[in-house]
Image (cartoon, rainbow, N blue to C red):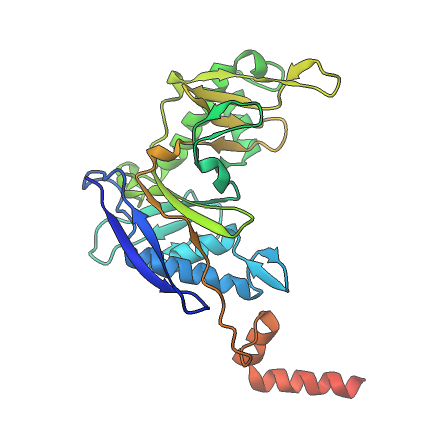
Length: 313
């Protein structure tokens, strides 16, 4: 049974705004814990701090916006977990205060919020809303895994199903390697994908998906064709694994090795409402950016450094 919780916030112009947290599919008690209203409110505010010049993405007026690494760190802070900052299977590991088993959060951030809703494309085709995430870009590991099964660059286009199944199975094996049931420390049943989608208008939305990937054997694996510059059909660069509505997986084996996953939006176990970042305070006394931060954190040392600069002029 789903429910909706509301959180009140106050924008810079003092007008109250609200955003909703939706729980469309409540999993069993053994599944992932759904984000609390407090966690999401804190996450939104932490993400908002990256507008001050410290975010990964550039924005007008010498401001910045949060990027994928900022998202990982923000999730770690809001969920009281540990950001791995490495090639670990999970980006954030949470050790619950109640002493229960640790779980992992795989954080994904994509600027494809517009694709999360049902829509009609330029060709008049109806497309189901999907959430976009890149599972991995480890081309070396993917190719090594395929070659161990007799699939390489010379024949993989002739074996799309075998290649697709092997790729998904490899990702599953990475999860199994840290599974507490196999000697690891992570409770996979409580772990999940956490996706932050955004658009150029400054809108954001969070989606939570279970870690268990769809059965690759049930999909239609193929290399789509496309219309080339000369108007003739030619093979596309991606291997696609299609469900009944379209591409669920894509692998770009010849151009970077990215394995992308596009679950239907409706299959999320939890989703926030679309939200905006909190505007930074507009007080004239506040300064933003890494220089302002350094000046506040280290006032004496900064003054000395500035004086040395003046002497050198």
